[in-house]
Image 1 (cartoon, rainbow, N blue to C red):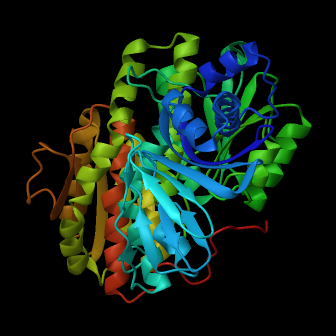
Image 2: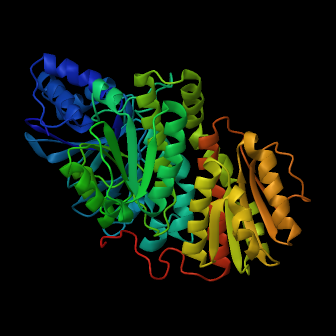
Length: 519
């Protein structure tokens, strides 16, 4: 809030830094470093000039850049709420003697079934007795009201059978949200509220600490950072970190990755680092979580609520955030510009690539029907694909209860190959042209022992049915790490469909919890 103005804000205000400098020069004082407080001050400044909260909001929106929805109240007009939509969803709920607003329909259903979906640029004034809406041109309009007949659970799932498949389909939008206000049109990166330039330049090693899916995101982050920045990265399971007697140094940066921000092992590892005075950066999804509060700085993945125990969109958000960190630190440190440009260009198109991969849903359903009764699955790859293999395998064992083995493809001959026989399925990730021939050699080893092969490749890869029983082709992506990250989506779809065919409890797998809050 700001003096007489209170604001609720969903989204990102891209030019908040420039506005904060402008406001500070005029004598404004801030109590936080959030873009939300900047919005409150801008509206407050306009209110002081106009004396009208409606006019103030309309004028303020013209000064704000980004994708956001605002809800505004003024101390002088306490029975009135002004709300505006700017590239961020906003739904109005119509009640009797009361009215509501939310970012999506399910939140309103316990209170009303009559809703108005606000159009882009619309502003609404809400009181107990009614709602007045005007368009982006300031002209009053009569919005269309809809009657919602869904049950609440179905509404929350958005028409999907399970949260997991809904969240898989949300990934293009969640990555857009993650990148908004951070990856600019010129492919530069802004990461507010982290460290100053000198601190970013001082780090000579990065340590990533995480559990489960977040650990797998960290492994992919390791490839990105080491390739672009040429500084060493160590990735630790949080549950093992403290017991390894870790050697921590003054110039280390510890990146703590967690969806919930409440993972007990990760919090314990974080505490050890902070006690030794090491700089810490949280990559989390849940705002205000324990890890977010305990770290020196935090970057939110902006994935939105993730209900299914098996993480999907949180993983892609973690990878995208680690890519942003790589780009930001790389530019400051003068890293290889060609590598950074390639990564930035691919990252900017990641939502598009993920959308293309959703078209593979039917293909993965067909493959799932063919392998539903498998006795064992291997997930294999080289380079960044081997990191992704771990995540693909985890999804299959989590939701479909299929025993999986995962390893770098080059390690097959060192033991795992002994398990290959008819009925065994091997999923090979092959998104790096430089390792393609070696992966084909590994595929032939599995085929020679009558195993079934699924190959996840990029479009244009000339793999034939003779080399692979099933081929899943993702878009052609120049960055190997982004290509590998995108290849996870069809693996998520495959795990979902196998689980569905096997009659598994997909959203709440046996023996597992969403947030692991005990060590």
